[in-house]
Length: 539
Image (cartoon, rainbow, N blue to C red):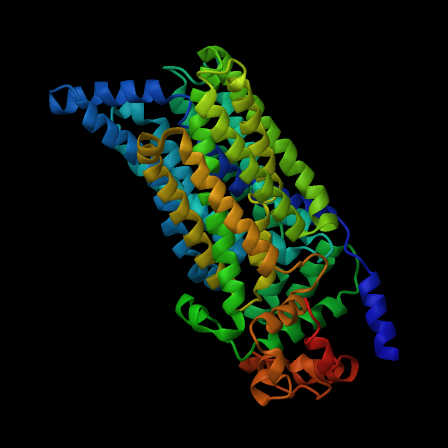
């Protein structure tokens, strides 16, 4: 009875937005996530001016005019090396976050932003286009790291009742970065012959700001406690983040989570892919990240300008319509920040992918008949806006939240490596094949994207559980049923993985061996037990 009362008191104490939590999240997301979005769109507007520079420089270096085929190859490398760099950046996540921490990785990552920003900004002075191509690969590494580490960092700092909203912040800053690149790319600002090197170089400013300010904010308390074994430092970090002194309950929860996953150890990607208790978690994050990119978001953005032109808009007006579309993307992501913890992750994913599916189907119909029906081009514009709204609501922001929530401390870095690999490879594939799809299928290309959206929608409806408002340990227990472990709740193997699943006291172990110290475990075993039947609760 006393345990239930204490548990109720702990649950009633909901986390709040403190100054440290808000500012730390803003510094990390503006310094890292913003750059990801900015560099997605920064080369779109100045494309003709950059190609002219490539042509001029190539002629000087090689004493001959550049052919159309060579120009196509060079420009394809400029665009596609960015997601390829993102893929390699994702592969670096696990080793770095385990070795130097989440905050340390973000600080180190700024090297991959500041150096290429300087190189791209001075490329005209140096009369070299090759350095731009190399820099796009380096800035891709920065994006690959930040797209995985920032959600991990802010997710581990957040209280569970705010984890969804704060978890959307990285995606919000990505959309803000895209919007700012679109604004700066307007012809009379920086999208012109003289301004484009500055446009590319501006990506270094957020990196410098992050280098200056992020050291003033704490490292992830979970990393500090469970990876480094420094309880005092973890407590101080939690006290700053939560705004109150008594954080013992959260420290206990972290210890219990750590103890319950000792069987897992520190998982590599290889071990993660063969570890049965995490099988469905792994499948879910792969499907969500592939669905996010293969749903056609980049193709829609790529094709948008030609759709606007078909509607009779001139080049000058198209710039502002593109900025308007980017603004809608930002506004809907802001909305997701406020509703993800009330509506839930699963609901936003279903609404988002469902909207994208319908948008792609109607867009296909509009594109097929736009030459015969006068108002169809305007319907195409509406479809693009509706699609962007749908994607910004769920498919864009939620997969990283799910990845953070479905994996615990030992397996989270490897999980983000897998999720990041799926994300960036899918991004790269869409960029690589979309031109061929358009040549082969034309307007019917978007039916393929609609089918992918529908398949992802069905998968989410059947297999993805709701995780809002739950601790990492509670989510782990929910997924135990999906992985077929609830039938073995009485077995020693299952108890080793989930020692909280019975009233048997946890074995007292020493922190020097990476486990809970005697005095801490005495408190835990006296205060915390769970009924076996709780573990088999249906989803």
